[in-house]
Image 1 (cartoon, protein in one colour):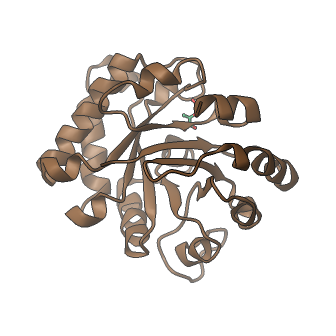
Image 2: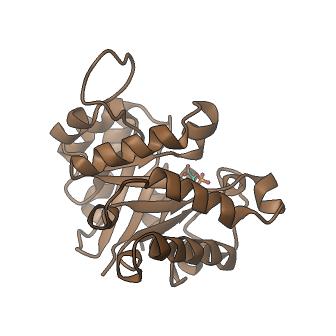
Amino acid sequence: MRKQVIVGNWKMFKTNSSAIKFVENVDSKIQSRDDLVVGIAAPSVMLSDLTKKAKNLKIAAQNCYFEKEGAFTGEVSIPMLQEIGVEYVIIGHSERRDIFGENDDLLNNKVKALLAANMSPILCCGESLSIYESGKTMDHVKKQISSDLSGVSADDVKKVVIAYEPIWAIGTGKVATPEIAQEVCKGIREHLASLYSQEVADEVSIQYGGSVKPENIKDILAQSDIDGTLVGGASLVEDSFLGLIK
Ligand code: PEP
């Protein structure tokens, strides 16, 4: 049975003190369940304090590097994250791809390194507005997934959470309709079935992300191939975050 995974992506917002206050206020209101993961992906400087505070929330990272250690100024390694209790790491967010030039080869290395450490990548994929308008969404997303999961075994891929995030819906207030989101998430599952098997594809949690709010999350989660959400803006305020998981 695949898990429902709802994760807030704080991006480069909040300071340590405001992040701690948020987790202190919210954590006890989250129910810890085997079939539901509720998490916050926080800036790396806050992760150590937040993992100490969180009992029910999973504290996730927004990025990592794939080498264990070395001369990689500014990067954060997987052993560093693992030692402080981080289990989930967002990989390949469109902001990492577009602003910081991360490509599928690099992302594939990150995915494999996380899985080798028994951690779960939240692997983002999604198309730009021009790709969406040219009707090539599925080709684009399938290419990203094939490259990013290249060399990943069937057993390991079950630990990957895939986040479908149409770039045109991120932070824009334009949400893909639940039907559009379902269509693409279903296509992703079919693609996983062709790369692995239907049994494996049925175990992979697939999130939708893009302007999700308390007001629209119910319709999105009602879709059969959507197993959770990755949420930016609406995860920053306590009431709105809690509204997502009601
Ligand atoms: C995101 O940052 O992954 C995201 C989906 O942002 P927003 O919910 O603000 O569109």
